[in-house]
Length: 252
Image (cartoon, rainbow, N blue to C red; front, side):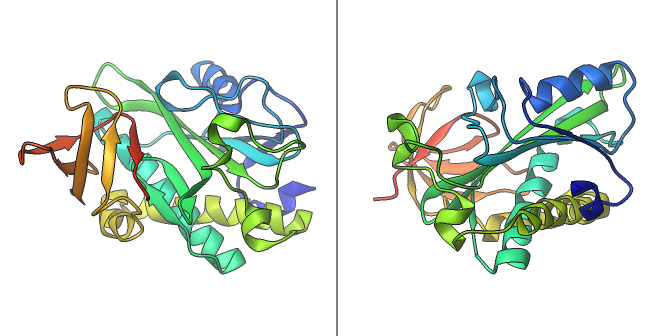
């Protein structure tokens, strides 16, 4: 039973679900208790950032959502993602001795390929604080039968491609380690870990393509500031900051 790896959490496991984030958001709106975690190894309608779908093939990944009720302003919600990204990098290194990196703002990469995605969604109260937040994580564990879809096969990897075959116990220990690290980072003060988030970045100093917004086009990443915004230099030489949006990294 996977419950043995988790402490003081309400764990529900599903062989199949539409979306762990959608299901847990619905529960949270109806009074679900904090520290509830939904886990599935297959999502029929997995969701990513900016309305994108998240490829969630059966038996090839772990997809989980974690309900938290932080006492923070909605404007600081990005630090949930910051804390989660730092926690996942730490967890993979702690359990598998593999060093991964963070692609701003929410993806975990290994050697320029995506290993894990993070999606944070919340509901804002009348006071402007977060009423609750659902932290969603999709971690690729093994190659799906027939491989990944052609459009992102070249930029996607998984735990077993990186570390070799792992046991079920190792898989759940990795997920539990992520939750433990997230609790440690976020409950301390996620803003204190922006330096660590920056150190793990695979995007600082690289050329990127900004895929949406007023600065759409190519730019060079100069830094990630203390508000977790991307600081870029535009082709005109002008500096700009991105607080959200979608970017593609030019690794070559």
